[in-house]
Image (cartoon, rainbow, N blue to C red):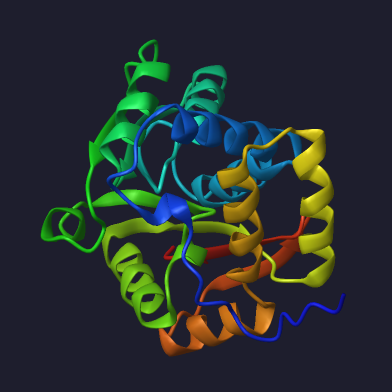
Length: 237
């Protein structure tokens, strides 16, 4: 069956409900983290961070904020990388779902340099959160264009060094391959449905370029990466 991916879908995902909690959500969060690791998603974000911090002294304290942090897997990955490379990292995870941020905190109890905040990124508290780098992995696609422009502008205002965005390419091939992965990873019904909607809410490269132009970004790169991801790095230095 032909799948039209010309435009982003307006369908909502079950996980968009910030009040959601329970075992089904916990399983979904952990499966998303597992798939992201195996398909190179964490590596993609880490490479973006490395590209940004290469421009600053490795003796500096670097505060990194992960927006839509899920179960905190990316932050733990960064903490491990920082420990191996003698980096002074202060890592903050942001998620609007209290169950999610509590789950991430529990999984990160052995990482003293990671903290979590249950916060809506459109609230005043987040808009006042200053940092060096903002990460946004598999989160941007949850929002419509006006909200995306608003939030990325806030990221740019508050980040001293830059932003790393890692999100989905919207394509029929990515959609069909994800349907196959559902069986391989034995995803529950919610994860299957949300995953397919996520791809249809993903982006074309031209859309990310358009966002960059509307936000007047002069120093940015957008690259396609496996598995059907775009790495959008915005540097301020």
